[in-house]
Image 1: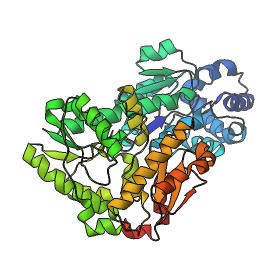
Image 2: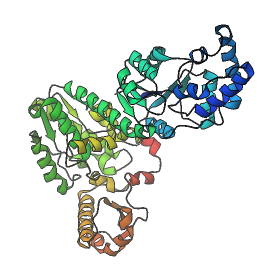
Image 3: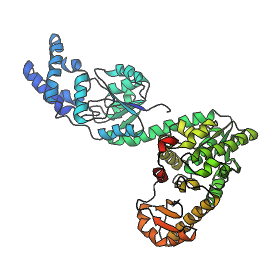
Image 4: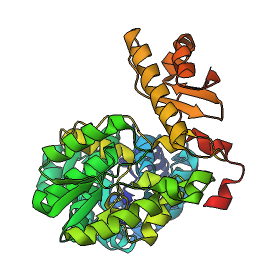
Length: 476
């Protein structure tokens, strides 16, 4: 799923519990017409158009006028007493969480459908009313819907007509058996189960897209740092192409912690791929040492200037990086453009996979990196404007290793820890629950070569150094 997710929803008995308002409107209409309408029966199977609902009880010649009057009465009798169904807001929010759009396709009179949306504050992008059964398919197709959620067998018919998965909830008048017999793909008790289902659906679609992208390459060299993203990409490439057509390239330099090297090699070798460990020399690039806001661009330029020719020399068609969809949305990643300029491909990003999805899929695949803490390069610890040198990176690495060891020896397991180099002052960022206890172990940070050390009271925050950049827009 490389395009934006679009989810269609029915309204009556899917997003709203129409029974109270519908019953109230029928009562007023019946009284005006002098007809005793079987309200309990009619509200027990909501969904069909009004002409079908009223036809058995109102003379055929009077049905159009009765429908018009029903629609006039409806706003004053039905909107206020009609609640959202359980889980409706959360279901719509789940679509947003995946960057998607929401489409309401309903048989209800469009102005009245909009009144419900406005009254309940339903987060819907488009309202398409007065559409029933298979006719919903054309509307769903026109808006590029990826699935349709409803409660009625005729909602299933609409999804089938559109050629998209049908998700049915049991909040309407149809039974699970009826819905399955109609051909629905999924039956949920109610919309509270929808967010988890959608997570799985989107992940499966994006993994399928990832496999298609990877299969488009004859042979692939993965820029492999050992982190969760590049580890997952490497595993996915092996699944798609086989280990003989994939290699892992881990660039060795002063900015890669020594502690990362052996685990990275062991992981790659466990997949059966060839491991290459070229040296990169970003420290020789003046722009990298200067450590302005575009430092990462010089780093990625060096990496791809080394890996590109290496890939060609070793018979690999292209270099792939582990950039994910969240990285592209982060707003301040100058290295991404530099890598793209040098022909690197980004399969995780192109498949729309987020960091959370990478971790979820890694866990499902039993990859040991699924919960590995973020491990940005050592230079990311140095405040912008302070020159990057091997000595600075070495003391940061030693300070982090020694502080982690001291905390864990004192019985405090550590997940995320950074020692930020602010010049001659070290600022420690650690898991929030360890902020206070970290003060007791600053001596090991000072011993690594810093004149002063402090603990950030806010704890660990990925990318916190970006907040110190005076004009981040300049470097985008």
